[in-house]
Each structure stands twice: as structure tokens, then as C-alpha cells.
Image 1 (cartoon, rainbow, N blue to C red):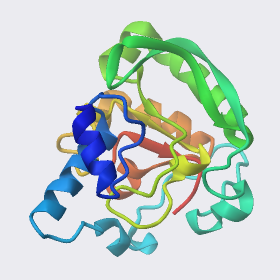
Image 2 (image 1 turned 180 degrees about the horizontal axis):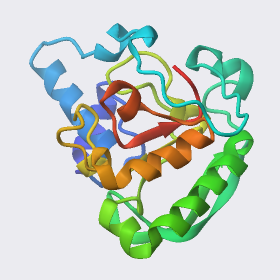
Image 3 (image 1 turned 135 degrees about the horizontal axis):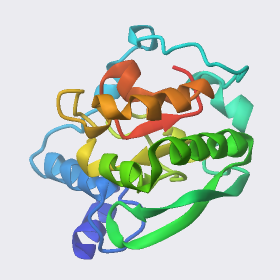
Length: 218
């Protein structure tokens, strides 16, 4: 696996850290490698999706004014240089690509820290440990990651540590609500808790990338 990551890196494909683990970023890198090897252009399908095609999420219950994606550098600063603060979790999460590793917190942009902390507390109180594990909300897919959007050329919201991924294996990037685990009815409150704080689900707004929630509007 590490050799494959190194081969991708040699071709200029971002695999993230060379760790020998098979996560979603490594999967995307291998797909890009195979396209280049076959002489085909890399997919930039997300560049062709317009913001006005998005479904407007419910109005947040509190006054939270997260910026639009185009305004993120002005509001949060340059990509890959976020001012971060550790978020302590009310329940343990597992690393989605290395399930034997548990975490009790992670680093997130300081401006969204308190908002995210309130959401995780609501998730814990509403679902409890059994419900969280059943739906996969304990499977941490990452927060800060300095990279471009998968399938696009713009900076990912992860580059500012203002996006969080959950259970990537069962909520893959291109999966619609027909397949994604977090699109099922028992996850509705999970998304509503985020939306009450002004966060946006790409799954509920665009019907892809159901693993992802971000503190930025489209």
C-alpha cells in the first residue's frame, strides 16, 4: 500500500501522508493514477457543479453567519494555515481507515470549535453510544487536511479545518441517498443538529458526499 502511495506521489498525485493505510484519500489517488496510466484526463466533475443548483438547507435555529465557500479565505484566512484548537469529544471515535485506533478529540479551526462542540454534545445526548455506533457517527474520516477537493481544482474546506467527514466507507463521495448510510431516516437528527448551527451537509444539499459536513455555505 505504501508503495502505491509513493508511486502516486511521484506522479504528482496527492495521497496525503505515506502511511500504508487504505483510506478515502488513498482510494482517490489510486483512481487518479489509473486514469493517468490509461492516458485519460483527471476528472474535475465538481468544477462543473454550480452553487445555484444546491438545495437550500433549513435556516439555522441560531444566528450563525458562516461564509460562502468563495468567502472562506477572507473569513478563515489562507488555506493550509488554520488557527486550530483541540475539540474534546463527549464520546470516543474510531479512525475510519484504522479501526483499532480510537480518539478522544481532534484539531479544528478555532472559529468553529465551540459550534462543533455543541453539536457533538447534542449527538451524544440524543443517540447514546449504541445509536452512534449503529449509524457510524463514531467513525472519524478526518477534519484538517491540506488538499484540493476530490474531483475538483479548488481548495477543500478541509484545508481550513472547517469540515468533518464521518464513516467514509459507507458514505462514499459519489454515492447518492440511495446508498449512503447517513442518508437513512435515523440520521436525520444528526444533520439537523449541524444545520441548527449553520453547518452544511453536502449530502442534503447536493446528494453526494454524504460523509461531509462543513461550516461554509455554497
